[in-house]
Amino acid sequence: MTKRQFAILSAIIEQYAEVAAPVGSVMLAKLFGVSSATIRSEMARLEEMGLIMQPHTSAGRVPTDKGYRLYVNKITEVEAAHPSELDRGARAIEARVGSYGDRADRAIRSAVDSLVELTQNLGLATIGDELYMNGIGNLFSQPEFMEGSHVQAVARLLDNLEPWLREAAPNEPLNVYIGSENPIGKTSGATLIISRFRSPYSDNSYIGVLGPTRQSYGKVMRLVRHAGAMLEEVL
Image 1 (cartoon, rainbow, N blue to C red):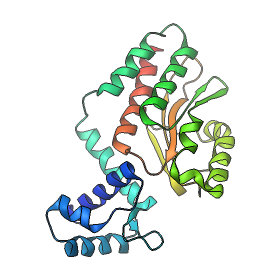
Image 2 (spheres, rainbow, N blue to C red; image 1 turned 180 degrees about the horizontal axis):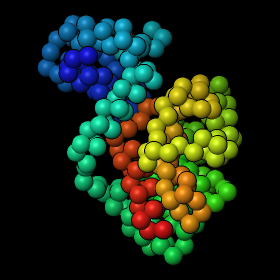
Image 3 (cartoon, one colour; image 1 turned 90 degrees about the horizontal axis):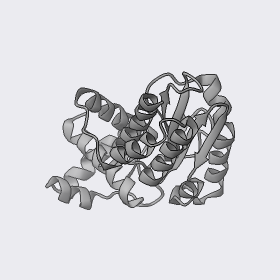
């Protein structure tokens, strides 16, 4: 893959996250300062690689799960090499969580509520043997989840999430399950981003968000990672 092809893939992912509509060659041509024909040629190559697809008869393209995975892996590498400074959202989580340092349950709930507000996803965390969730309205207000089949698959994922977390115990500080990578609800079109942290309840406590695969991955991953690190520090 060339640098330009990855840049085009990134632009499609980021634009699609913002507008929830397939991204066309005209917009990308303006962005990159090249002809629409050049963009269409590059998009055809990305489609051949299985990184983007053309939904229905739309002239635009949307990312595939494979395209998202490539993008997430790349931004993870960049973040590891060049950690970003704390943004306003991360500082807001710090302020709210820090005020409950003596109450683990309140600190965890506060961190989840902050993630819900900042990411507009569903937020979740394990508190002892319970799974705390907030923001279900956010999740089902997304255009992807207006169809019955997607709603049922997401509901299945939520119903089975707590036992799956206990059994699988994802062991990375940040774990990203994109669409069909999800252990449950593979057809849900949802992404689960969770951070493992140590708490008074368990060495394997989790906090994260569940939302559509159409995510602002860089921002959401940073916030979830920071929420887990902040909880571990405070608790």
